Length: 70
Image (tube, rainbow, N blue to C red; front, side, top):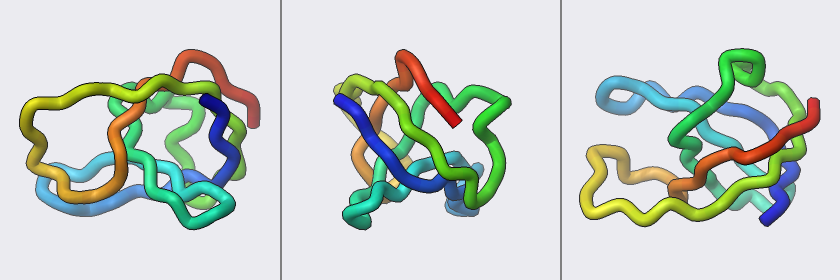
């Protein structure tokens, strides 16, 4: 899937990076590249959904980035 939006940092529990897409959808990235870890950065990513049994983070749908553009 392709997601366009902005990078956000969520200071929940141990903290994590996510993306809020242009439709206000929330995506929790499980493998955020260091080069994208900038609050407010506009990105376009290609990602796949991740199945999780349990997560401490009650925010967004988990995804894994496979490709991206800044």
